Image 1: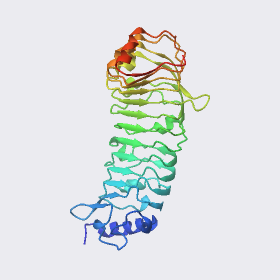
Image 2: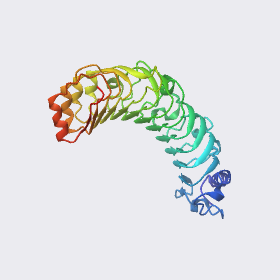
Image 3: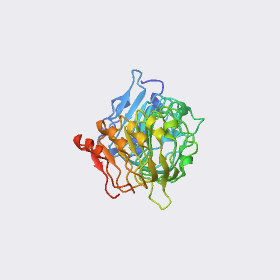
Image 4: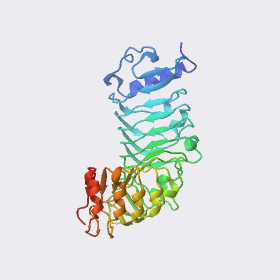
Length: 331
């Protein structure tokens, strides 16, 4: 007869099937003949017949997935990515999923506001490649202390950067906000995220000073804030100071297409760096010869499209020996 919630689980699954065009799913094995729900395609149950996983990725689900009807109290993984689901995700609806660890609704057609409110169990949320226009985090939300990964890239988020980043989970490790319409300056001072490993907000419209990332994200590995000059007033300003050399774990530093004016020679001390792209900025200085210290690890060095002095340090021959891709044109 199933676990404690078997009737609710069955009701929701039948509702999900009917409202998302189940007869036209690519795979609806066990659904069309209403088999016991633990035997249906995409469903995983525990030993007590509680549904713990729903995996229906790329299965031609259409229509509206009503998360406010989810009462699957033991559900840990919800993967509805790469379908044709649409409509609004009702704010707070995911709070009902008290055991949810992983939610992926990417590559659909959801619209409106993305409310990042989850239970304390939730570690991963992928809402990318949809049509969300705004997002909010809440410091009093249970997931504020637990969430590790948030992907909101490739949406239509049109907010001020300070609003987007307000109340970001304190222990977040990976945040992807690439390819949106986020504008304005970063909050000052920039909040501290000791656990941040990957921070990417490329292809937006952010302006104002480059934050003090060595202080706020000391363990970051990927920092990509490239292509902020989509509007005349866009682009990060200031310098890449000597303090950036303290980012000991940094692998990728991409600040291309901004309005930065200076890079410190101390960046040659970033001995793990694989990619350094600061093309299409406003650098007006000699090329720091100290950057040759990066030859042992660097795969890509792009200083093109700036106002750098034309003299190329002779030491840069070391990059050629290692087959590093070096771009110095348009200076």
